[in-house]
Amino acid sequence: MSKTTKWLVGGVAVVAIAGIAYASFGPQTKSKDKETLTVGIMAGDKRTDKQWKIIKNNAKKEGLTLKIKTFTDYTQPNAALTSGDIDANAFQHYIFLNDWNKSHKSNIVPVGETILVAGRLYSDKHKSIKDIPENGTVGISNSKVTQGRSLLVLQSAGLIKIASNVKDPTVKDIVENKKNLKFKELATDQLVRTLPEVDVAAIDPSFIVGSGRSIKSAIYVQPVDKNTHGGINIIATTKSKKNSVAIKKFVKAYQSDNVADYIDNKSGTGEIAVWKGAPKVQ
Image (tube, rainbow, N blue to C red; front, side):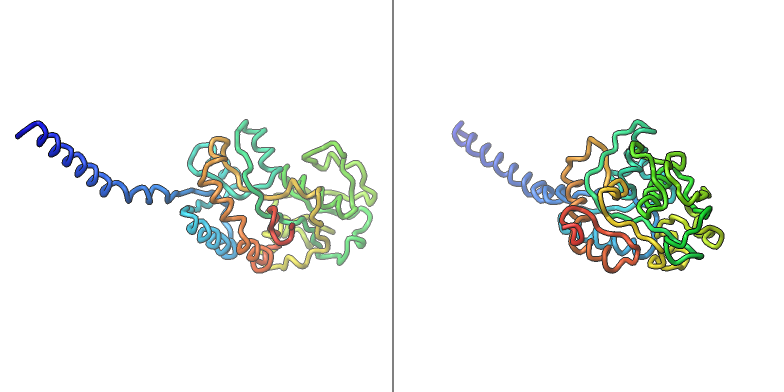
């Protein structure tokens, strides 16, 4: 066989091998585009499950598979994020995250806003804030983060005033209490049970719904304004992942019109979709 013939045969063989390699590996490029992201959330109810089903379907259209991991303790989702067990979480507000990062020296960052649970005050004894008597008793959470939000709701309702230079207030930061209200600090999940005993209590709507009551039974609802920014819930991840394509796809899947419609009009949780462009915050 001449050198020329050998060269041609060898060239054909190389091309053939390259073609086989492309046929074998070419289609796999498409599968690599299908990313998977594990997201941590707090265990919820059927309404929450439906909301996440919508989000997962939105993500699927973007080539992203969302795996949802539920937790029952509020300390778990951030710990799991830091350890790498999950890629992102969606359960906390700005105040909680800031407090967590300070306490644990972690590098968790917000990458998208989701919902706001407007602060509410409930009472079994009174129908209006004006009816709260002198020396009345207020039920409030003993959790530092939750207590801070509750105090801001009470301030918004005109019942107290808090020192202006405090970011995460406690009852010690009350500087004006004209009705001389007494504060009963309790575990967050115990506040509903105290309604027959106290004059008013600041309670998360999820606990109200869980007790069989209507969230509409609140005697005061905090308006959405600059004072409620710290209470906005967020999608969070680590600094190393914040610019990843998968995270951006997840945020887009959550911040969609069909998700906002469900949250605002169908969930019955009292939550409001608050990301930029959402129907109620255009």
